[in-house]
Amino acid sequence: MVQLPIPVRIWLEDESGSADVQEAVKSLLAAQGFAVVRAYPAQQGSWRRSFVFRLRRAGSSEEMRRRFEKIERGIELQLLAKNQAQVDRAQGDAVAKLLVALEASPTALVQIGSVLIVKIDGVPLVRNLTQSEIAMLDRDPSLLDNPRSVLCALSDAAAVPEGPEAGQLAKLKSRDPRPEAG
Image 1 (tube, one colour):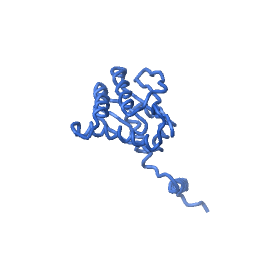
Image 2 (cartoon, one colour):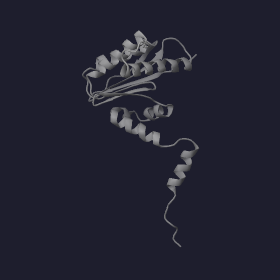
Image 3 (cartoon, one colour):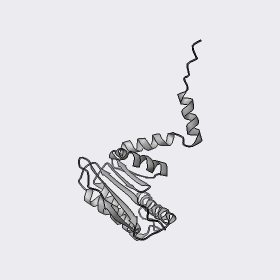
Image 4 (cartoon, helix red, strand yellow):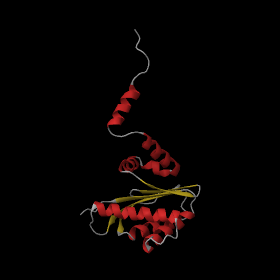
């Protein structure tokens, strides 16, 4: 059984409404059995705060994946079909509280493990991150300081192939196309 830490990052344009968003995120994760194990101090300017959550009891990585799928599904259902009967009441309430808390901010970003919620000009977008995208955000957390920037960085990263073809592409790009001087 594992108790892997789950990174949670919140970025808001300003501090107004930050308490509501924090509580909504905590409530959403608590509904799935997660608890805060570390909360970092909020950063001023725009408003950003990070947390680390873990399952309250040990569980398998498969169980964690299922729980994140439930969170992602709950967010999608709230955004796309608010009245769909299949939304679990506690899950649906928690997701709805998060989206209501985000209404006050026209531009926001919330990362809960592999689930990314980005709101730009009042329009929310939910995206499931791959492991390589999560690693990229972990390497450069400054990308999370601007919702537009993080979407551009993720889009650029998706355009770059990984694996053996990436090495071949790099070799092709490094070749000088000019003919050799003779």
